Image 1 (cartoon, helix red, strand yellow):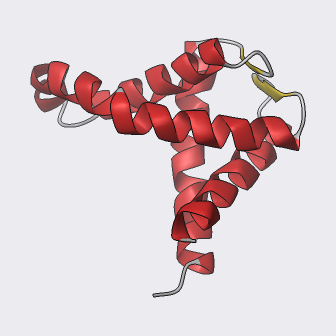
Image 2 (cartoon, rainbow, N blue to C red):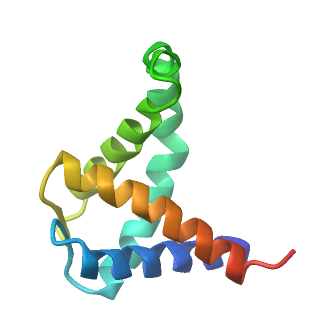
Image 3 (cartoon, one colour):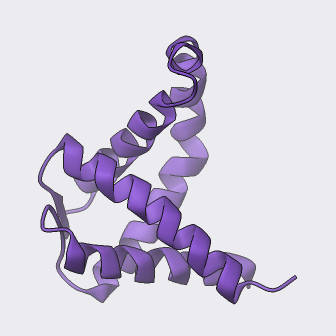
Length: 113
């Protein structure tokens, strides 16, 4: 149940952000649910590999390179989805930062222990 709630929170957050950010586009709300699933799968399998490979540069930048990894995951999600479009790396970077923030806020509001 917790997984479904997080999935819906991510989908709703992505849908709302796409309405405010002109560089991120989804065809429908159903596309954002697929986006949340694909993003979750990539975060499970690809993100740890990228994090380990980029550990030296992440240490050098005091952790700020993690934002770049998140943006790359967003762009990779865009690559796998035809119903999503991100207009460039900077839009992916901004979208990933805002998605993390909005998802964190919604998660603290809606998830109870």
